[in-house]
Length: 204
Image (cartoon, rainbow, N blue to C red; front, side):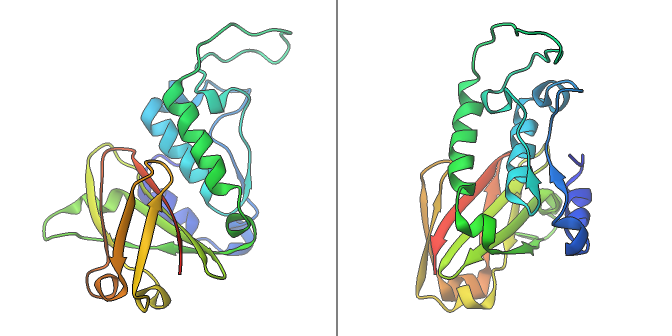
């Protein structure tokens, strides 16, 4: 996984013929576990990114439970390790979010984050993209940085013509209501802690 949000964004701007055929994973049996390399929170953010962009998605054995001990593949057993309940809950919600025709057969679109106010450069850490199929939409927003970040995301014109939209975040179960005119004028404001993400599910 790329280390900086700009490098992730640049990769996602690549030619679709290349980008959409990439294999996505954040850990494998040959390397240390993602929570050990990245840290717990960053590994969760990296997992959200890898699971929600175009390409073939792989999950290593134990990744969904937040395991930290790498076991050589030639061993017939592995040490007992407690499940990281926060990581397990995140992946449970994430996989439910991606287990959808929208993410597998829909159209994907990279979005840009803009300044929330002058001299606030934290928006550069925010990554965002959309999946949509028919009336079903999914919006992913990730603060892939070590500081709290605020930014404004402008959505496609079609969404700005809606009377109102209910954005349901499957990671927190919170619902945010916005009118189309508000989105057209001011965009969607987001404020995220380091490595935090929104997984919005909505219809339009």
